[in-house]
Length: 356
Ligand SMILES: [Fe+2]
Ligand SMILES: [Fe+2]
Image 1: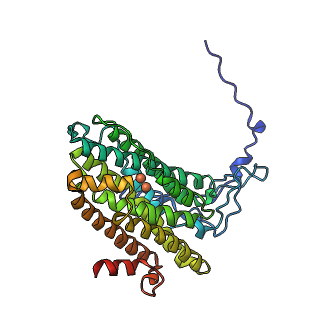
Image 2 (image 1 turned 180 degrees about the horizontal axis):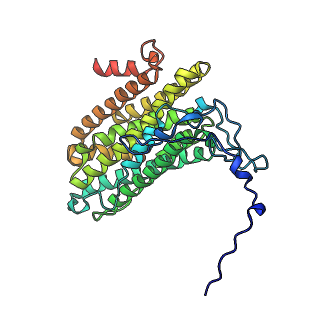
């Protein structure tokens, strides 16, 4: 028989915590999409400070505890450094659109392919596995570096890391799903990792990762129908494109916020874009000259075989051009588009030459 529990007399309870709290009387109301992060941005809870001194991991809006350890060591403490207007929306969308690489891809539709096609597909899958590894690894470093006061962008980055984890595994699964396997590591991503990971500023990192790097990958995924040989590959590209579009949108909206709120940093950001464009130029000129393994594999898939390489290369050049056009459109929507009209960007010249 269990003994009856003895509660301490009320006089023995501290209950000091009952008086220590954030703003009280809050009642969030669910919207059409349910109770979203946007719905709980109410009262002082929805209003992050412009500069955060929160180094203790205190949830935004909670009462501070003076004897807390300074566990954070957060480097990102200025709102403009990481903020964007609708992070809450992007986060909710990420939650709603999670998919499973195990069950949402019709793997049974993959049938034996010609050797050169399977090899090209496996080479591309190897390359993309590397790319997705970087895309998860780099934002992950910034999450724990950001004050919890700016938790909405942090939540988006956490969701991105999950997305990239799935992208990494889905391309690995593709490489192993049809009698092929992983092929030659590109090593090419070492440069990308070096450049993105050297960033000591979030916006610098985001311009390289979200706007330029993932933007280019998004264009390729959107053209996935052209290089897919079965419904499984089509589904992979389509589902990955849906996720990438969110990651790119994060970068675009953050840069837009920066443009609107931090004019003192405009010139610095133009320099990040200069650098991104130098890399885009190098990449877009690549198909005409020195091939990377991934470009060759792409051209073989687009053309329909080694013997139709020239056809494939033409299609690849069209995709490269589209990557540049979409990049320009994105940068215009951040507010930094004057660079394409005042001669600062070399990309417009490249497009004009290509059109001539
Ligand atoms: Fe990805
Ligand atoms: Fe991504």
